[in-house]
Image (cartoon, rainbow, N blue to C red; front, side, top):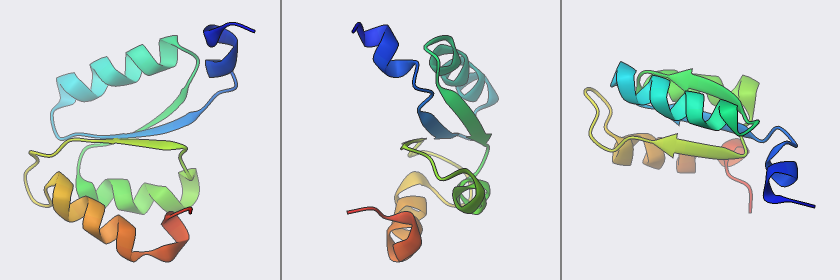
Length: 85
């Protein structure tokens, strides 16, 4: 089984970034590799998407307007239903 076959399982990735160009580039790269991608342009939008999307991975920008990446991560970790052990 190749690495491409492993990725093709359609891993779910949430990309949170307030820079539209970065959001588009990262999403396209992940989709090209067979991932299902959901995009959020702010920390709050990303947190709202967590319940319905339940991603395997979150790619989170640190330097965002409003809630920065560290604040967003702190809120995600405070909600037990989002954190898998």
